[in-house]
Amino acid sequence: MRNLPLFDRICDPITLFHQRVTIISKLAISNLSYERNDQQLLGHINFTLAAQQGLLVTGPNGAGKTTLLRIIAGLLMPTTGQITWQDNCYLAETTRYHQALHYLGHANALQLNLSVAENVRYFLQLQQMPVAIAVETVLQQLGLYKIQNQLAKQLSAGQKRRLALAKLLLIQKPLWILDEPFANLDKKFTEFFAECITQHLQNGGMVLLAAHQFEPKSSPPASWLENLELRAC
Image 1 (cartoon, rainbow, N blue to C red):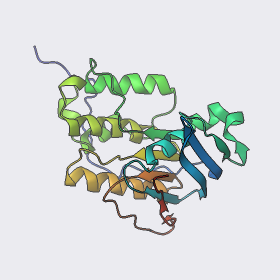
Image 2: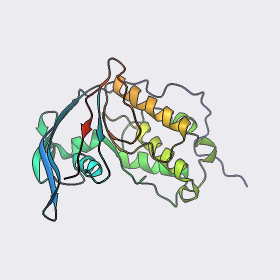
Image 3: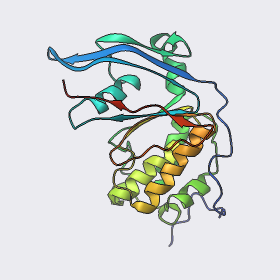
């Protein structure tokens, strides 16, 4: 017998971001450095990111782009320096800070033995936050609606990445920290997610992004800061 979709209301494609980010956000990084095994991987990183601003982190492989993003996402502790969120040290606002950010790393953070739809439900239950847009709409826009009963472990690399993006788009959070988000996406979905980033900024969000072959384009009132170029220490 055919499996019935867990999300079965057909929606016409609509603009994903119809809600503005309601938090006026500010992220500041001051004199941040990181050492591992007595070797400096990052040194003297400084920048401030405000609502409607994006920052592209560039540099060769091994320059520390992933390390920097993981530190700012709260997954690694810096050796020196300070991270402030809303003018407070993020360590004093840990719960509120993590509730305000989406981190997408190289791994897709999927439950491989759950279906596409079950992965979405599991994620929403963990977040315990209001859904920003219709689940069905996101699945359709990302080409996942018709395969929502398929196990995540059976998906292609591109489909797994799109499922990770679906989780990002479903819950409205002001700060996106994205490490190579376009990996394994074809041209259609690369362009789609690039537009999602633009809309997120225009609606008051913030984006910290490391990506190859991405050209940030300011679209008022949203803007991109000058690229942060890292060099191998």
